[in-house]
Length: 92
Length: 376
Image 1 (cartoon, each protein chain N blue to C red):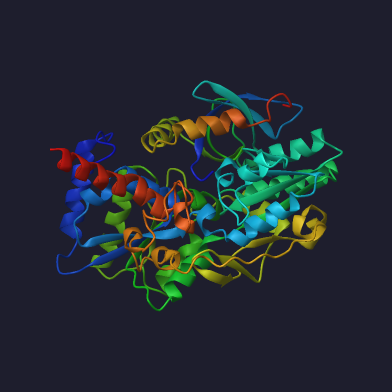
Image 2 (cartoon, rainbow over the protein chains, first blue to last red):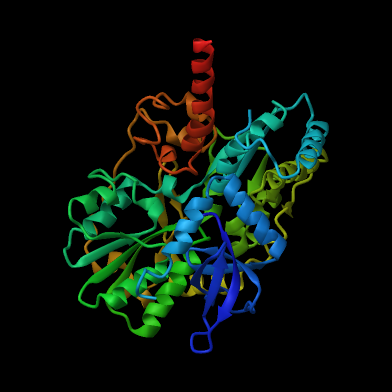
């Protein structure tokens, strides 16, 4: 909940512009872009995600380092569990 | 002994440690508080204490939202879940946190509809998928999670969803820092500022700490090198008796914060006159309530909330540990009655709490060493 999870924007949607499909180490889930409305990411951008919402844009290098930090903290598994949990299986 | 022996760049870490030793006056004792629970966790995990000279003491601050939530609020939230029409939702972090009648998970085992969500927007989705039920989201967190709750409420209102509400326990970090600085038994030299909270609030809200309290602040990232660099920043300031806010985590934290997030929070939340923090007591204007214009989405407005108050066990010295007056192991209950498996005090509840972090890394390490010694 407190540590941010890095993800890459791999798809944007015309009909739901506030959502993006992000890829976090191979797991893809939709996240909300509403908190970046002043600085919307484009395809290929990296973002830091907190509880299903993209909170800031970061560089690819920082994204890789953030994932390493989560691994070193022993939080990578919890982070992946969080990402997999987004979207209430079957309803999104 | 470090739990992570392979730092990414060990030579850079060694250089940073050398610089810290050079900057630290050997005739002075430094007390530096890291505010954020994520930093506390990282400090123990990476064994940073072993890298620092013994006259630099890191004091673990109040930045673990699960830890500072009073048990009464958990009881209050769960009391609403007694209604068979209510689906109680919360982040996974909350599920094992004990109320007086057990944790949310234990309530689930007794047949209540308690579900983990990983995002407040999923709680809203659950409400849309279950129009005959009321979905309550038990919201916790500092400014890292509060904007997401705010935006979810805005979406709920826009979509006209009627069967959704938030039991709001969001807290704000600045008043907690003020309460700690106001505490008479507290003496701190500098702060390591929270990284991800600051992506939302920016660096300006800390300026009074430098201006009025003359304490340096370095907003920090979470890697070992980030934390060491932040310590270097505040030591450099202390050396020349300067006090300003520095942003070590520039690559992620903008000085002005995230305006869209602050705007969403401003539209949906209002400051509560006061709120109870576990271990710190009541702190004025330290928590977010839901504005009247969103009252229909406020669980505390829609339902009768008993307003339970549970005092922490007298023997638990969470407040002293939280303020840095005592080290975790100096509490009478530490590692005996109070362990991560059976937490009594607030700081043992979450992996980001200083007692749990200390127990998991230091205490177990010591136990291991003594076992090995006795076998040998």
